[in-house]
Length: 398
Image (cartoon, rainbow, N blue to C red; front, side):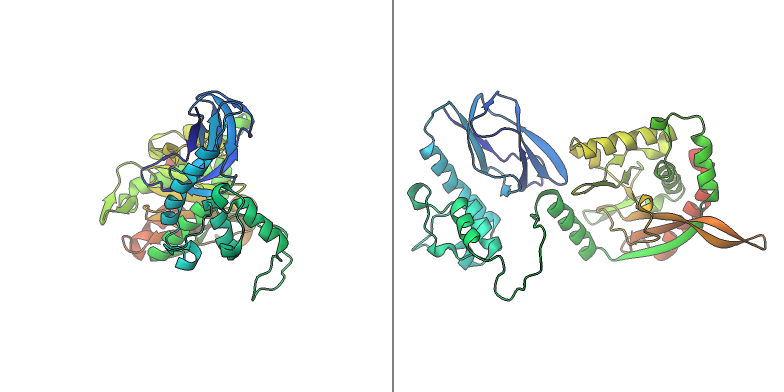
């Protein structure tokens, strides 16, 4: 008996997912409960287990393809089992789901004419739409004359890459706008387009901050060393304690002043970023905060981070200082949070100290906030607290 591997629902709001990686290939034996593929959604990589023991007879969705919940990804059965009927039936169901999923396409691309609907698999239609290919004249080689992905790929292989109105641009690589990259893009666009954001930029003398970190790390092992990000998380947590009206989220048309101070720390990945959250950062020691940041960053880079790790944030820190190229920037608010602190590089700059012109290590800060719920004056007051704590970082630990 054959079993379908379908796109699972991994969250209340999940409607689609991207197949990140197959861990087995066609013909491989699999055990029930064995991890068989990876699915990416909402910046998280999730492993999908085999629903039954047998052989992976057919892979229906390739790596990198985005499909709706319930879409058949592959089929497990016995060696030699005939699955022609089984593979055709799920495609009919999938086509209906995919048409709903792609409801923003034009009627011509969806080919909705009831008189002469063209048989085409969802994957083939998706590629055809992306490439601008009119598939009405393509001869299908699948069951019942259905147009398959391979049929469309043959057409694209025989056509020039450049479409009408385009010029050759020497493209070195084409990457799919799916999975984590698309999720990040949609979230950023949603935040940018719906939040009236204001950003305060300032430079601060980081002499005492650097000296404080050096003192903390004097006798520490390498894996226990405290980073500037660790200290800045504690500084932000202390500032939010002192200015609780900044520790707010806007949800369900309500401004909610949050009792827990949960600080997200942006972590850059090879193909995007995630924001693990340090829960109750104000109540944890600096060493505990440092360990959690390291552990969550390692989980993120190993695609092992889960939804709980990135949920519940009330404030975010994004540190680009390590790249040595950015003084200030405009960080995008991680909704439903209402503010975010961007950290730039530390550079030597001249400063007047007690009447003398001296060089001082200067840190660039960018504080972005949602002007619907936070006005410029209280935002400036909060930033002033941050500056004072950077000048006296030990006070953030009390």
